[in-house]
Length: 362
Image (cartoon, rainbow, N blue to C red; front, side, top):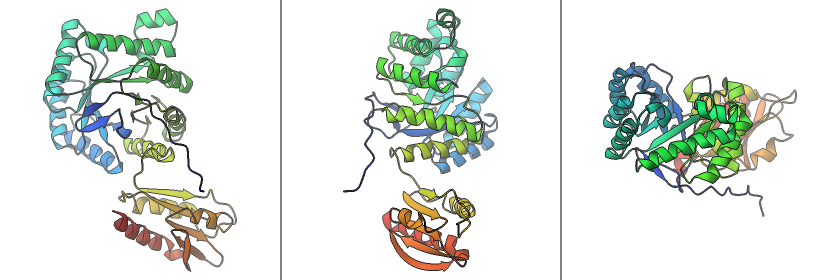
């Protein structure tokens, strides 16, 4: 009997629909990011959205800070390959306009939208256009009374902020909402999500906000998000990085694939290399990632430097290469060695076999 990773029992949440992408319930955990372009630059923003979509984005969020940006947002949503969420603060009229112009959802904080009438206008616009609302709570922008009550950002303060927003929306007879409770401090963020998951059945959007650059942010986000996913918490996620948003999508997918929650594209297993290596493992991996970025079929590829662990990893991979002596390498397919070839031909051979397998499985 072969060992299998234990299945994750996901928290039961109600479901929302963001432009056709289901979030919550039994829907797959979706991956999203946010554009970093000027929203007024419609073509530049669309180019970034297309790049994120190619990398696997299910949803994309766009900041809309002005009415001029709202007009641009309408042109963006009309041409976007995936649903676009409007990120709005302070001006309720922008939220209403974005709802009219094709938003897949609205991301707001009811606390900074304003009066009862203004919140009602946003809720009515969302109802009229069948849009959900995501309430985003951030440890760095909690209401003053909560900071006074708790003394500092705490998990309880963040949960209270979220439930306060829920009460506001419920009072307006609007229940089609999701939450995020993000913080840059890992343990604070995780505990806030754990407590909120017990207090509501609304879908939860996971993320460690302001996590840092590509390396540090990836580490922090991977720990926090996978920690929560392992507990069954989370319906959609964004990995926040001070980097190209395409990298956020890549890391998000890597987290989900490692947790066996979703599969997409090739998964490259590679050794860290040492002086025994018979091939340029680092170079092989980099080139294969570039060449095979368009493959959507889930396939495992092993790139191993030598025969210490190489054959063992090859047994569990769809295609594998293992460094050997004399400038040659061993090629495996579905656990069986199928050839010994010059290492200079290996990348071409692997790409060819991966594409052939992808076609056969599609």
